[in-house]
Image 1 (cartoon, rainbow, N blue to C red):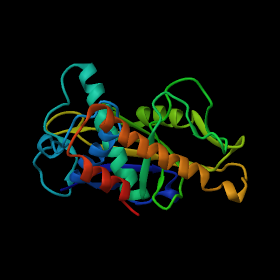
Image 2: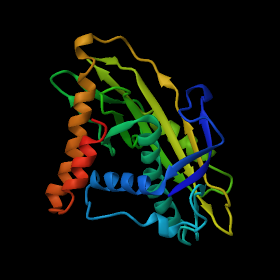
Image 3: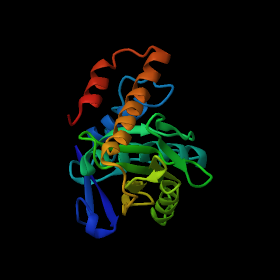
Image 4: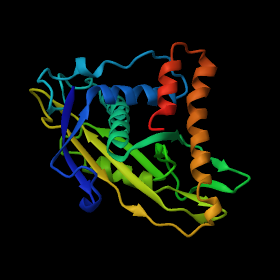
Length: 257
């Protein structure tokens, strides 16, 4: 079932879906949630089909509004806002930017290919972005950060924090910065019959032009990213002996190919 968010995108010239609202299918968000959980250590879920039951029963094409606030305590609201914010952001990036390969960074700086000197270079202290991502055809290298919030004033502060976090790394090949897209996505939840009353999805996405690199090295960052994507998928399954994910794993790896 499709639901909508009040939408803003910076800069407007790069917006993949111009308009004042943006639509996402609830099942796509749930599927993105499964893929996100699968790539997270400690995965132990067989499905994530819970969102539709939590939303106000207003029907397809209506605003993405929860029936009730996401918990009462601030700690619970922050935790659930962050979790659902990741799911919505991943579904948005998959649908509107065509990204299908996602690698988690956590707080560790990783070499994507040591022999080729492809590195994630930390630029500032603090938490790293959520993902490095690209399309299945190994294009559109993207650094992305997702934030969810319940701030009554809107998503602007969360978007600013996400943008700062997206700028904390570069991807380098033999010491040269490669061109990347830096995308910050912030979701502010709406609550039916309460405040805040509107659901927002705000995005910031300029391209960060890098240095020229040797043509023979142009695919190396993407191949390293693909390896990391697969490793993120396999490690939780191996470590926790999670069953019945074969089909989901295969669909994720093959999506878009």
